[in-house]
Image (cartoon, rainbow, N blue to C red; front, side, top):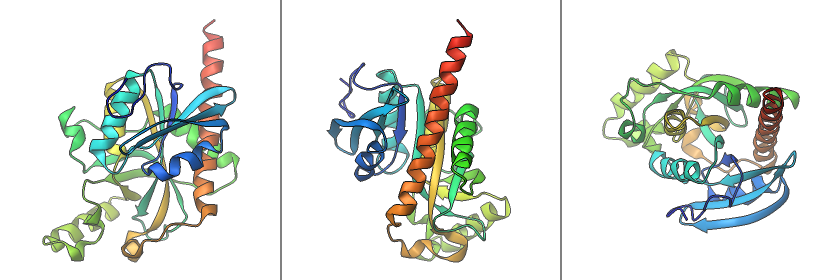
Length: 255
């Protein structure tokens, strides 16, 4: 049994949704067939259900890179190979804000956890198959979707430069990323992308914007209405469905 997530090989299937908040795990699992609780320890809560007859798990990662790395590494050890982060973010570009869905093609490596695995020059990119499936699934539902490079960080309150001692430096950093067309900021995906790639796994990220950093909305965060949370989950479910069906077709073609 893995020390942190309290799972062993065979406890869950190979496809996993990764929300940060343990409180969102059951909500996501309820969109699957036959949902059931599997394990809970610390910030790691796992439920499982069926999608297209395939076992699909939902495991929370907690906040930030260190706990996300633990979850991913231990899930890999019990046999999981495909990961979809369903999370929240602050939108960076003007015109993007609360309720927008954002699909990450890659991430600025502003977090430090992945530096323990590979140097900073190593890119943090989403798996192309996972990215394509999430895009196809969201478009199937007819919802607008913004794609592009996101930014990750270890300090949540970097989003409020005025609260920091190095406020001018932090504000200049945000303006740099905005000019570079970075679309959003969150705290886990750079770690997930780097570690998944180095382990030969697949990972992608679909996000719901809680507000727009460019518009000063993130400093007054409130939980989004359930309708918006459900939109993120349904888009993720459709993306995972695409992946499962594509994998089956590939396996059949290989004989």
